[in-house]
Length: 258
Ligand code: CAA
Image 1 (cartoon, rainbow, N blue to C red):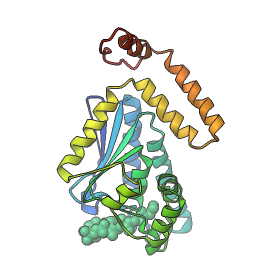
Image 2 (image 1 turned 45 degrees about the vertical axis):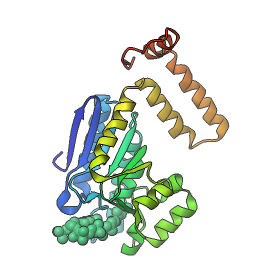
Image 3 (image 1 turned 90 degrees about the vertical axis):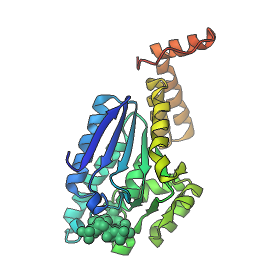
């Protein structure tokens, strides 16, 4: 995984796209390495995953334009399918994922951030879907996830105009959860991840699944899903400990993921 770094500390994985000389642009090799890192995080059963970009300038400046420039339609279809498969793998990780957006998040970079559950940004972050200016559409899920995140009207404006969005505007439209000074971004992300990691993991994963599956269905089916996930928590030792501790007016013992 030369193009992607993977580290685990305190039950939190950090995945770093590591191609700073090209502003972490995503070519086929980077995407495959990202897929391997995501699979590793799933296998390690970490409690949260941070996704970020190496260097000072970029989260990910998009899919690799030089690699795409001479693609045939058939090759472009395969490239889009590869990116979408890997980003769906990110989205389907059972534990929470946090995009730590330290700079440019354009095209495929914005789409990668959208595949994560939460987006935290530096004041220097720049978002956008500039693809139409290159003669293409977004190809790694932008037409689908941006509308689901900021609403259809804003998503259409952003994609049709190809204009960049600064961190302040990204916060105002709900594209990011919070904005930090550059030096405070990673500490804030690690603090959020540690807070999540300290909660009952089965409950956190069940809540993520209920939200992600429920948002795709009608309200009655979604509520039924929620009841089923709620019930599964009651078969866990962590629920017994969490509730017993409350009743006994003491702090719960650390949750064991059981
Ligand atoms: N693909 C390939 N290489 C890229 C790249 C990309 N998306 N973004 C940056 N790079 C490379 C540059 O070519 C340059 O390489 P060299 O040093 O070898 O010339 C290096 O990274 C540094 O970039 P710049 O010199 O351009 O840095 P800058 O500070 O002047 O500009 C930038 C920064 C505004 C982000 C500019 O690099 C840029 O506009 N990048 C492209 C952004 C973009 O259009 N992204 C969307 C791609 S299409 C897509 O993602 C499709 C999809 O949905 C799947």
